[in-house]
Image (cartoon, rainbow, N blue to C red; front, top):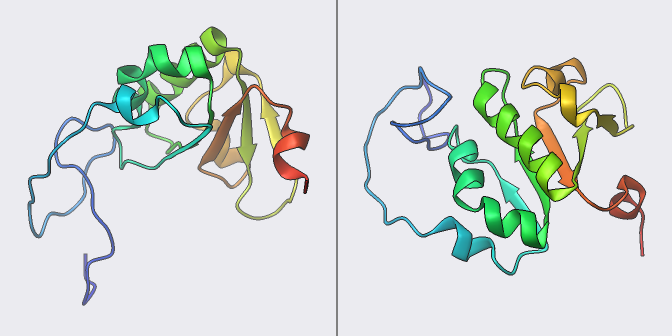
Length: 141
C-alpha cells in the first residue's frame, strides 16, 4: 500500500470489504465465535469485513446474554447492517452511532431503518448495540 511497514491485516476471502492489497498471506487457526463470546459483557469487533459472519456464528449466545457490542460498520457492509438490524430486534438492543468528529453527541439510530451508510452521515464507522441506555455507558461511576 505504499508504506515502508505494514499498516494492518485483513482477510482475503469471504468478506464484504474488498479491493485491498496483499503482500503476505498467513494461515491462522480459527476458534468458534460462540465460545469466545459466551461470558462477555462487552465485545468490540473490527474484523476487516467478516463482522456479519462472526455475529451470525454467535447469534444465539448474543441474543441470550446481550453483551454490549461495539462494531465497525463500513458503508459497503450492507449485509452487516442487515445482521445488526435483526440482532437488535431479537436481543432488544438499541443502536447508537458514535461520531468520530464534528460532534460529541452519540446518535440513537432507528433499528428498523439502520443502514451501513447511516454512520457516515455522522462522520463515523463505529456503532454500539446495547440494552443499556446510552447514558449508563458514557457516564463515570
